[in-house]
Image (cartoon, chains in turn purple, cyan):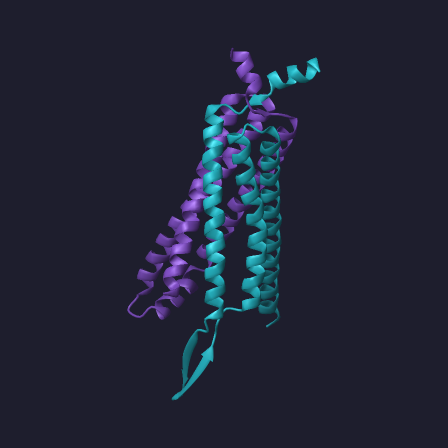
Length: 139
Length: 145
């Protein structure tokens, strides 16, 4: 009974394995590149903090340099945290999918798919928020 | 023939958990594509709307139109549509494969996911290279001065 069900099931066959492994490899590369970029942006902000806070305090009247610095740090921490979490889901998901395919471990493969799902959910929510903010900026 | 059937038994299967994950991934991928297409329309509308900024200089008021270049917006939209086409293909084919138990559609879906990540990675590298070149140019300019 179980065997006939297994034959009727979809399989991650050779073609699917190859495509998924390649997708996972590229996704891993993309996430590593993303981590490097987040690092560069953080270094850039730390190096240029005095110029940026100065420009912000001139741009927003009544904002002292200390207020600008606080706001800047808050925004950077939130954005870096969100992007970092998104990239973590992609990195870990791609790693587990590849490992699951290589070791033929169903649990590891499913965990990888679960993390890829988390990545797409988070990415979807971020795109919705972006869309809403750009529509609001038009109105 | 016997080996093929043995191979199939040794393969990973798309069990209920994997199916549930894949269906959710496809649903969210579709949401991402729909949101992206709407945001392209919004970006084009924004680019077509001229923004008027008043710049005051020593008592004179000059009206300057500083709308975002329509050319760059259209280029961005074309690239975005290309990327999202593969995401859409991945979502629709994988969903079709999982719901209709079609191995061919599932494989085609995974192939499109691969292409999607390849294109995004290549675009990311190009943008990063342009950014680094611009930084180098600015740095070189500052050194010359």
